[in-house]
Image 1 (cartoon, rainbow, N blue to C red):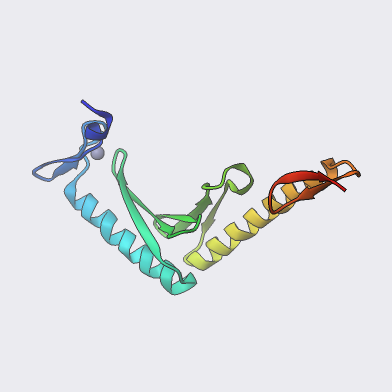
Image 2: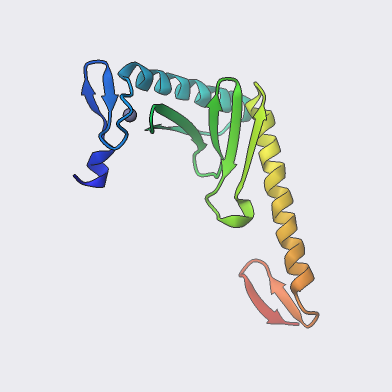
Length: 146
Ligand SMILES: [Zn+2]
């Protein structure tokens, strides 16, 4: 069986689960994950604005996350706890925030500050490691002599 087929859920009565998962996930849980994802999209739009999209996925149960369209913020929810991660651009912005908060805005703001702190750390690394006779052109990523 192809890997993509192995992760395609099959409906059998109340069960809605893929062969690769094998966790006997239910169709009711799938519908709930979709409803909860839609609710989180509304919450994110209301608290911080922007367009958000959902991803509902299966791994021993149905899970969901919502992401900022055209951005690099992914929000996951577990009860009243939100976690936010940024991973699209590789290591300098690879930061995750997990906070117990009913405010998505607070968690996203904390995440953005963490990414900023990480960006500053990398900027300091470059400044500290650039020899005096070299100058960094930050827009093109090339090193020119002064
Ligand atoms: Zn499953």
